[in-house]
Image 1 (tube, one colour):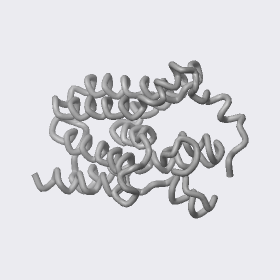
Image 2 (cartoon, helix red, strand yellow):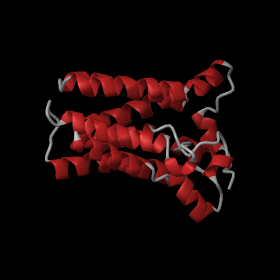
Image 3 (cartoon, one colour):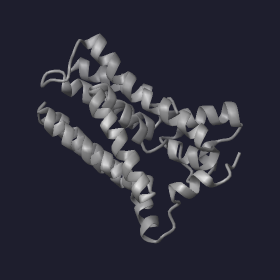
Image 4 (cartoon, one colour):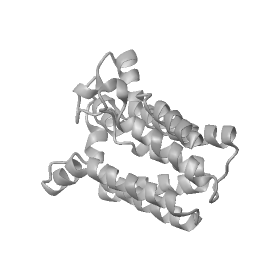
Length: 209
């Protein structure tokens, strides 16, 4: 039980490193939460501060999820099997939660997609790379990041089932999917209302700062 607690704390604290907020303050001298959609995620960074800045944010946000997995693998000497998977998944999803609900920002962060990608790479590099390919391909075809994210979530569940690592990781994955879908409900509504910004247009738009 102590191991589970330590893993939760480790993952959550790593997730609290809000890349877009910190870099926005240091480099752009702005609060990312006052721009665009008002969240501290990579997609809002792309929309508000330009695609180059957004890519850096996405990379570092993904690294949080990856680092959480790597640290647990090293310090707890576990692998992706029925014994180690619960700790690994708990670490990864705790990092995702830390990104979404950072305590020092009144629990208002991003949506956790990039951190989830990093978690997937940490679990299995091929699993993560296919996930990246899926979200990129679906986003390219549909022109909406939110729909690409749905593809990533489905792949996360499919991979967890394929790994055959027990019920606990699958439950965490389903809960994580439900949370992500909930956070993206405003995006889906805007897509339905034809008010959601298409990625192709966002990339062509002049950055705010």
